Amino acid sequence: MDEILRTEGLSRHFAVGARRLTALDDVSLRLGAGRILGVVGESGSGKTTLARLVMALDRPSAGRVLIAGREVSAMPPAVLRRARTDFQMVFQDPYGSLDPRQRVARIVAEPLHLLPDPPRGAARRALLAATLAEVGLEPDALDRFPHQFSGGQRQRIAIARAIVTRPRLLVADEATSALDVTVQRRILDLLLGLRAKHGIAVLFISHDIGVVDEICDEIAVMRAGRIVETGPARDVLDAPRAPYTRALVAAAPRLDTVARRAAQAVRPSGSGRP
Ligand SMILES: Nc1ncnc2c1ncn2[C@@H]1O[C@H](COP(=O)(O)OP(=O)(O)OP(=O)(O)O)[C@@H](O)[C@H]1O
Image 1 (tube, helix red, strand yellow):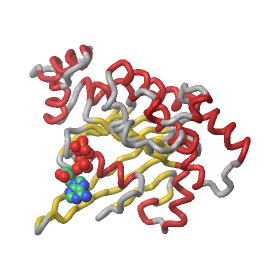
Image 2 (image 1 turned 90 degrees about the horizontal axis):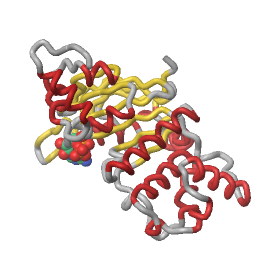
Image 3 (image 1 turned 60 degrees about the horizontal axis):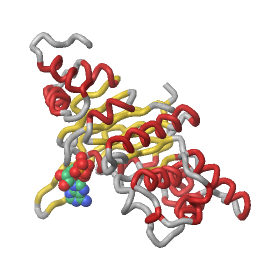
Image 4 (image 1 turned 180 degrees about the vertical axis):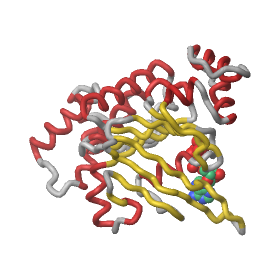
């Protein structure tokens, strides 16, 4: 496997008063180039902590993060800054994650300062317009402000910002959770399109197993900071081994297919596939 992301024995403890809280406990994951790995689990299971460690926004208490073979969790700041062109993040809140005072051109261009020789003038404008086209927005969007766009369009702007340096890894933390179902579908299609066209790998973090089902090749199920089950999406969803995964699949609210799987998963003899 041409590996883009690997975490090895990743742990993160926080001091909460006199107590030590373990947010992440010995998490080892691998993500191949151009693959989509879903990390699913309920609130508080450690998903955002994992995302922040992968993005090197936080340092692990133990273990390490390697992106394209380089240990980002131990890089000095100047080296890390350059490496960041290779991995970018899309956040949950399409309203809060874009600065309302800046025009879209400025917002999307923000990561370009990480490049050793950022494009300027007409070349910069052309790159920004081409990047907007990649996410399905017209070039005139560059001169507008975030409030002039819908939630789904804002998330497209956030994705444009994340791909402007042509990263090989996107970390999407609940990136579709604030959107209604039809808009959510279109954003998932956009991520799938970017993977197909550019081979971008995605670490797709969500509490929603139905959404994960729609987009992911592999799934890691998290509970209380630990991975309880991991494997190809079809295997994990069609025949969950861990009781916790079975309960998650059974509780998935939306998709008929998921409900069908849940019925199978809870049948005593139910390891068969639909
Ligand atoms: N900076 C921090 N200080 C103290 N505790 C923290 C900190 N960050 C996270 N935690 C705790 O770590 C645990 C995991 O939190 P995390 O945000 O990673 O979970 P999550 O799965 O992303 O949940 P959610 O979907 O609600 O964001 C929680 O108990 C949380 O309260």
